[in-house]
Structure formats: structure tokens, C-alpha cells
Amino acid sequence: MNTGTLIKILNDHNRWLKTHGKHGARANLSLQDFQGMSFAGLNLTGALIIGSNLRAADLSYTCLRNAFISYTDLRGASLKKTDFSYAKLINVNAFDDDLSPAIIQDAYISPPLKTFEEGNNRPVNKITCIVISPMTLQKK
Image (tube, rainbow, N blue to C red):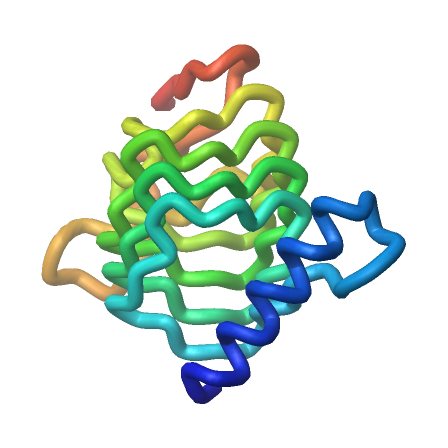
């Protein structure tokens, strides 16, 4: 996706949010490679992100409330104060500690996150993260 297209999608999404869906369009950021890109501080409430690469992306202070995120790679992403409240995260990949600085109140995560150790691209079964409301991660 080129920069101009991304800016148009983000502007349309902002209009969609401000008009409660009457104008603009919900952001569909699916099937894209956003590795290393910055979305810091953006309001992506309700965005649709399926099959995208957000590895090492900066999502600090990004609002992803009520977003639908599936089959997306978040390994190494900066998630400081990223708001995943009420979001659906389905088959999302993340390092063990990636979600610890994020806000995940009442988020739905299914199945429990696949986690990876640094330098290893194979899933590690020893730690599984599940969401406990509000804003708590429990490790099994």
C-alpha cells in the first residue's frame, strides 16, 4: 500500500468515527505489510486488520478499541498504552511481553496468544497469555 492510499484510508476512517459511520469508511488495513511503520497516537477504533504484518511497528498510544485483528503479526511491536479495550484479537502472534504495556480491558483473545522467543520463529508452548478483565494478563 502506498503512502497516499494509507493517508486516504486513515482520513476516511477519521471521518467515519466523527460522523458515527454516516460518512467516510471504516479503516480496512488487511493483508498489508506495515512492518516497522508508525501508527503512534492514531485513533483506529473499530479498524479491521486481518492478515497484516505489524511486526516491529510503533502502535504506542494508538486507540484500537473495538478493532477486529486477526492473523496479524505483532511480534516486537511497540504497544505502550495501546488501547485494545473491547477489541477482538484472533490468532495474533506476539512476543511474551509485547502486550504487557497495552490496555486490554475486556478484549477477546482467541485462541490464547501464540508466543515467540526472541530469535526463534517457532511458537513456544510454555507460556500462554489469556485476558482477565480488567486490564490484567495471567500467564499459565
